[in-house]
Image (cartoon, rainbow, N blue to C red; front, side):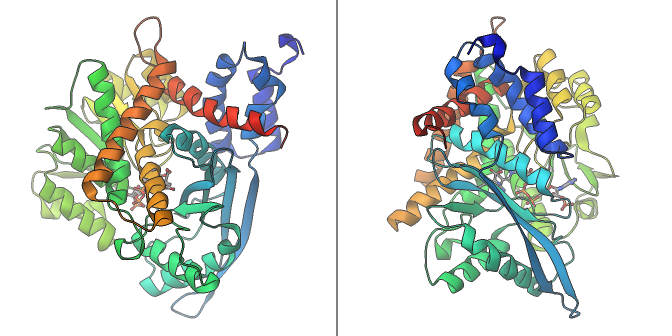
Length: 451
Ligand code: NDP
Ligand code: 2IT
């Protein structure tokens, strides 16, 4: 086939939009990757002929199911559950489960698509998947969460397995939810296997998994800065979110000598100009993630801090940013404000927190931009190590796992660099991550023929 016979980027995206109507987050995630891949494969006929990107952007399967549960007042509640199994060319499907009222098919398809490239970048044998439900855990009792998780797993168990698909946590799914789901899987199947990661240490979990995503995002930031001859010491950092990823990103940034001045939740952001010390971060972890409180309560506990209701932190002056809450939390205008205020580098702890136009703003301003699929891969990487430990029925020490995480993040940074260096010296990490992540999965797919 002559090169001119191939669909171009616009025709490709028209097809994605036509086949996935209304799924705007999915379109966004596919476009962000397709721009770089079309460029990369322009002179690589085989990827066109085999329709590789088209196949990657069509999930292997999307499973959706009813989840019934009974609340504490004996009302019958009905939620929708999903598992999107995007691609298993290089290993079993792997990716988190999200419980949030905003969950829908578009969001889970974008996450499963992204996960495919991210998992490839880790160098570990994991395919891409994602699941979840529109169940809102806020304000629910432990017993309600348990009944929901059990009901969710009563359907999900038939689609997952240690060598088939291995879910983990994400927004709204932490140690408590993983425990309830693992307990139900074990009860139904009578098998004690590593079907989930992010488990408690007593029942097959891995040390360092809890910290891995936030720490890994900071390691990626550190490596980008170091490549540019800079470091974290004394830098002012904005962090958004106050969950698992945000609190551990803030912790590692602080340990490396930076000053983190914001955290947030869906109610607004806290600005602490003195910086979040370990003691303050520990308070946030306990208050937000154990007591299930609100970040706004921080200002009653620590003087000198202010709460900004309904706002995001991006207007505060800073050197570095770590968005760690959710998708599309940095608009084009907020990206412009960050650049105007002196932002030097940003690493995405959350998945797709920056809109595509915002990424363009960073690129044009030559701000170092660590895209989610590279910067937040530390979490799933340690999940991969949890799978290895479960299969071998052993546990590695915290020191060993810390070292493996550090090495994997450095390896991802190196893989990005391979395809990212422009002629003007600017390192386009988003492009590097897309191409490096694509190549491994694509070449495995080519080996399998037409499947
Ligand atoms: P948590 O549930 O622990 O925390 C989520 C945080 O983000 C909370 O502070 C929450 O605030 C805030 N948030 C969630 N949704 C919104 C929203 N729509 N608007 C504003 N704030 C919001 O989740 P994680 O920390 O695990 O996940 C955060 C991000 O990191 C997600 O994008 C996730 O996909 C990504 N990620 C997570 C990994 C992991 O290992 N956990 C791995 C890689 C990426 P509130 O309490 O008000 O809801
Ligand atoms: O987005 C992600 O990478 C995660 N939520 C973690 C997935 C995992 O399988 O550990």
